[in-house]
Length: 203
Ligand code: UDP
Image 1 (tube, rainbow, N blue to C red):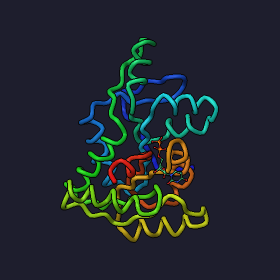
Image 2 (cartoon, protein in one colour):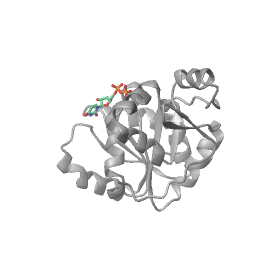
Image 3 (cartoon, rainbow, N blue to C red):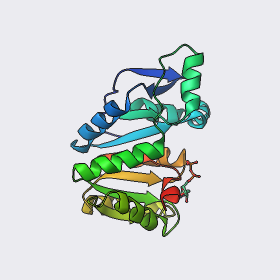
């Protein structure tokens, strides 16, 4: 269970018992800016309809959303559901766009980025693409997503040694959300966000 204090930003709503934040993009990035300077590791969840459905079967996913630093709606389905239920409508921010904007923020703020996940070689190609768009960004390290759980302490050390404050975790949904949550308290300070197939797309 993570130790980090991650107060929920307001306002939030709930769909089928799952927390979703209703923040404008600029407020999400302002919160990310704060999290970069925090001495704790923080989880950001990008949520779609599939994850809400998964959370009905797996209460751990509801817990993850409750405790996350941010829960950002990834898809139009969430907007549609909130509207239909008469709830405050969260503003959609696709996970791949958020991850890209976080890289831009990391470049601006001199924060290193660690790419964790995807098939061997994919993170390297994704990094190349990111460096084309953000030439002053530092990719602190990379690790493919087919590692043994016994390697987690070694990965945590690589993240720490790389001085990375943004860790993009591409293990697929919901594996990446569960993995981040399970290991958060043993990971170094920074933002940890699941990015699904983003490395494949960037590469
Ligand atoms: N992946 C991984 N380790 C695993 C399972 C999946 O690194 O144990 C990677 C996979 O190679 C791909 C990504 O996770 O790069 C999942 O992409 P997908 O588009 O399926 O995820 P989604 O966007 O649907 O969450």
